[in-house]
Every structure is written in structure tokens, then in C-alpha cells.
Image (cartoon, rainbow, N blue to C red; front, side):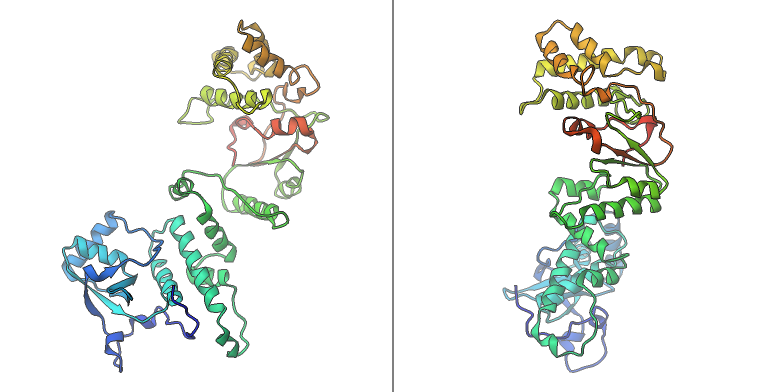
Length: 405
């Protein structure tokens, strides 16, 4: 990368399109450059897709040519690097053109990056991943410019932090939004694809101790509550979210050995998913629960999984025929069925489950007796104790058909 240490002024995006007379006609006058000499910007974060919009672009170029010239800069190895105009180049190729109208500019890496990002952010449809990498590149460029020693000669004028500058230029609410987008760049590609396709409602907040993870989570919860109509379920292992939920008018449910509020892990919500069989989802949940109870690095053996799945289907038989609350099974019903099986593995599973049914850890061997009355609910499990807390961190489908968020 070329250093920007000797530069002071950054060419504005608007100035690049001035075509008035001057002493530098090659710099201010657009030129026709062969497409074979135009190369993409290094690590260009914006996708060039052959979609319906590209087809319209190609048709427009075929009729009238490129109406808004691109922006390029010379490459040391020959040809030109595209700063703005990747889609126009692709449209020119589809339109059968050999050249494209561009402005040729002498720009360092930081100037080129800022202009590349700003010009592409004017598009109507931008994927979250595109914003993420674009904001990251612009952040790095702005920080490079901020380190230039010659800027200390300028008058003392308050400067926006880099992330706030990016947010202002891009029309984002605040710098925190930019930070959140940049955090997406740390996701592995499959997860990033899910974000782009808007198929995953979950998120992660990562950070070192004391970095403000809880504050960020509380802010996210508050934003979701105020801006959307989503249902929000909080599992609170340290009793730190309950005050916020109460202030938002939500419902706090205390799950502990001394509480008279109970949540049945065997609850089956028949309308929980439109795409999946609710019994299949419940079987998968109970399998994961049994793996937690039985312990061991290898998890359940194939025979044990078969036994659990068989018993799950049997334990819900009466309820599915007559789905009334008083027929909802509890862990004790599953325990009895495991004891009735002839395989020795079934007896091992039942023995592992026994402490949660008739032993000292039987908090979850009750039918649900709480009614969800708010779209934001906090389940506090701090008092569960070490042995039950992991159990409590694996919630079933929410009672009453509420959607967990």
C-alpha cells in the first residue's frame, strides 16, 4: 500500500465531477478507456451481481452509453484501478462496449478508499456484509489520515471520531451502528451469508471483561422493544436484566428451588413453527437435554438416542389426541417410560434423570403455572445453583406460543 503521509487535502466526491476549464485537461476531462485496461479496486467490498438491476443498467448503456463517468487511478503495473464504476464496467461488458468513459485521478490509497466507499453507499440496495467491509476500510483510511503529523499545523477544530464521521456521511443513526456493522466482518462466511439473507434472528456480543457487553445487550433489547413488535425472551443467569425488563413494563419470572413459579421443559407448543413438526423439534430439544444430564464428552450413544426419541413420541401420545393443559407430560412421565423399556441403556438414562424427577433437583418436574402476559419476559435463574443452571439455560419453546428473540 502506498503511504499517504505527504498528502493534506482529500478530493471530495463532488469535486471529482467538476468539468470546468483548467490547466489539467487530463484530470478534469473524462476519457474513453478500454475495458481491458480497467481493473477492480483491491478488496472491493461491494458485489457486482448480474441481476435485474444490472440488466437495466446494460440496456441503458447500450442505448445512451455511460452517462456518469467512472473514476479510476493509474496502476504502477499498468492499466487503471476502478474507484467508482464497477457496475458500470460490467454493464458496458454486457452491452457489448469496448471502452468506458472515466475520470482519471491521481489519488493515494486512503483517498481512493474513502471515495470508493462513499460513491458505492449511494446505491439503493446494499447488503449488510457490503456495509460491514466498506465501513471497516473507510475507518482504517480515516485513521491513517488522522495519524499524519502535518495535520497538527491546522487550527484547533473539533474533529468527529472516525466512526461518527462514517455514520454522518452514510446517514446512519450513530457511530455505534457503524461499530456493529464492522463487527460483522469477524463472522465466518456461512454466518455472514445468513445475515445477508436475513435468515438468522440471533446475534452475538463479544468482548473482554469490563468492555460493556451487558450494557450493549441492554441497549439492543431496549431498541428492539421500542422500535419493533418482536417478542423478547431473556434468560438471565446473573439477575442483571430483570430491572430493565420491569422498567419496560415486562414480566419477570423467577425460576429457583424456593420459587412457586414453574416452567415445564416438556411443554409442547403445537403452532410454534409453520415449517417443522413440533414433535420433531421437541424430540431434538429433549435429546440435547438428556445429553446434558447424562454428561460425558461423547454425548448420547446411538442406541440411547433411539430410546429417547421413542419415549418422546410415546409420552406425547395422549396429549396430541386431546391437547389440554392437564394432559401435558412432565419429566416424571418421561422417566416412567424409560424405566418401562427393556434395554439396559434405558435404565441408565432413567437413573441419570431420576435426581431431576424425585431427587433434590426436581425444580423442572412441574407443569407450567405462569402465564406470559407481556411481549418482553425475563427468566431469572441466578438462584438455581450450579447443578441446575446449565439445565435452566436450555429453554424449550416458550409457553403460550411466544416467540423467543
